[in-house]
Image 1 (cartoon, helix red, strand yellow):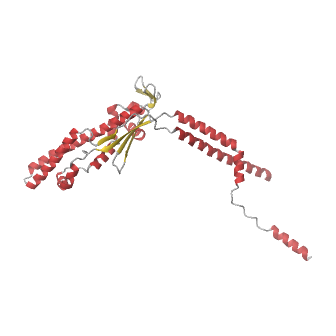
Image 2 (cartoon, one colour):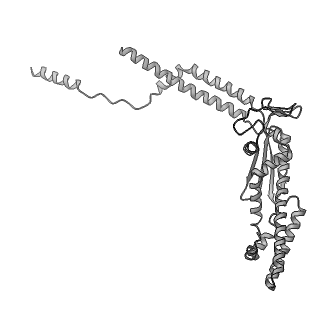
Image 3 (tube, helix red, strand yellow):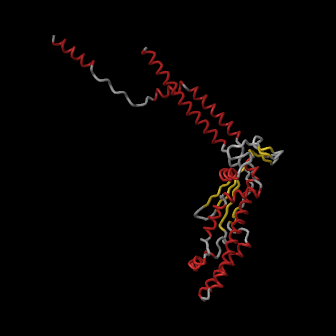
Length: 329
């Protein structure tokens, strides 16, 4: 009797023992099994994405990039930066700005070249609207731009775009500015050396080089004209103030300021490279800068492979759940 009671007790205890905790470890065999079962899905997805990546990369036109290395010109700021330390207080009282030196002048020019007023004037001056907004490629054998027939009719010189909101069929100045700044122009600087890099990207390597030269020429001209105008106004003001004062020390200071302003005016009128000096002039690029077709194909294949693996795992999980539900019912 006692043995029977003990056996019943042991059986009862065994029935109520808690289940063993499930293992959190990933079964590599199951993963490899799922990958092997879905190998054709992975291969097919990777292949399709790779082919799509190749076709997309081949459909993109070549873009060429022309670079020019620039240095601050010694005349940008000229003697004004030297006079600022000696007569800064007097000049401020007289209402004359002596500037902040060469670095401030070149930094100002680098910002002016990216301004709406300068870019729009540059596009209008050189008639860049059509090659900027309507081109979609470049014909190497004919050295001609390829224009988008859906946007612009070359024979009639008319724009075919559908107006959207405030933007008409012909590109507005705001559109051209945004396109030029985002897709074409790039201005970089090296704070250590003080050099600047001006870059232009376009379908035509010849236009990229030409636009780079035009930009350097125009920014020097604009900054030179601005300095001539400001210096002329300063000279007129200083001469008027000189006539009004009878103090000898003040007259001496005014004469020094007038002398420096006159020197700066002469330099601005003579030097073509007023703000930027060209260290390395732009050349016609022989090799494309964009697109990176090999990188596009590799990324497309990787995306397809990852997607194929995810589909294989999802398919395997769906089969297992279907089997479980079938056995339960």
